[in-house]
Amino acid sequence: MPAASNTVVITRPLGEVFAYFADATNSARWRSGVKEIVAEGEPAVGTVYRQTVSGPGGRGISADVRIIDFVPNEKVVLEGISGPLRPTVSYAFAPTGEGTEVTFSLSAELSGLKKLLMNGPVQKTMSAEVAGLDRAKALLESGAA
Image (cartoon, rainbow, N blue to C red; front, side, top):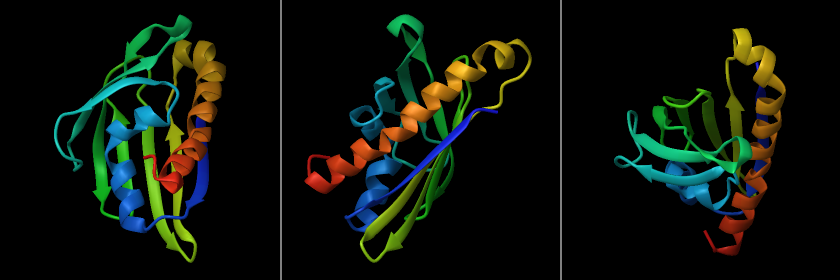
């Protein structure tokens, strides 16, 4: 099962950092694979985000997600509901003496032919996506978020 995770400490208050990541429309600013994303409501369990991500050859692929777990200032978990890959996307938050620790994790179940053909490319993409957390940290700390 492809999976990747990255943790950073952002020198901003917990509530501010949580609000930024809880609104998945912000991900287009720091996740290189997100081409377009719109929300169908405020961040809460059941909210759907319609997104287009970069696919093979740069073509756009529908990859909508829905919030399945939402605990303010603690965690947000989304699941893929469209597209060829249905990942689980999770953010965990914890206050620290320096600001807020954020862990961004991606995972996906692959089986059959998808597992055989896509495991390596999916792992590479997931690793690149979680590395983008460093861009989000820079945006939030610079005030450009």
